[in-house]
Length: 226
Figure 1: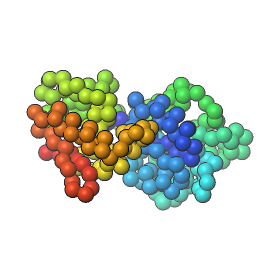
Figure 2 (figure 1 turned 180 degrees about the horizontal axis):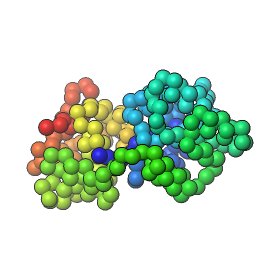
Figure 3 (figure 1 turned 90 degrees about the vertical axis):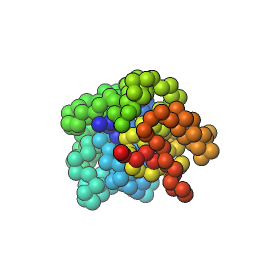
């Protein structure tokens, strides 16, 4: 069992970064900048919660919500509308579409954290473990530590996020671009070459382990289940 996934949908990059940075320590963050991208990520990743902007080009948050339910992408996922529209009519429309909460912009990160935590506790029954046990590895999500056969292995923050991504999604191939999106979306200096370098360092640290990070030629990297 792993971190809850939260999908943040907003066409404003600064707001995506603000929410993503503020919530990433406790949750696995997914990002989308428009409605079509949001629906694809929603369908593929099955997030525990969606934070959805309303005023977006091409497709409004209301339309995203409606399509998600009509296309049965999700009938149960809690939705929070996060919008600059503060009138009662907009809020009533959001609630009529099944939103659990409506947060008016601007708002504080502390308020959003409390609301997110409360909704997940109330509507998502799955209990998320603080640790990932995978073969002879124990990855502690709370204190960001790794144990290999009870021996502590030192990881950099990027190596930790990378290993967490692989262990949360065994048998799934991640391209370099996908790895950057998942673990370093806020870091403009992260490139394919730096991803390869981090993989190489991580492999060296995991050498005593049964767990291997495999290269799939032309596609990316993965960790296989035993």
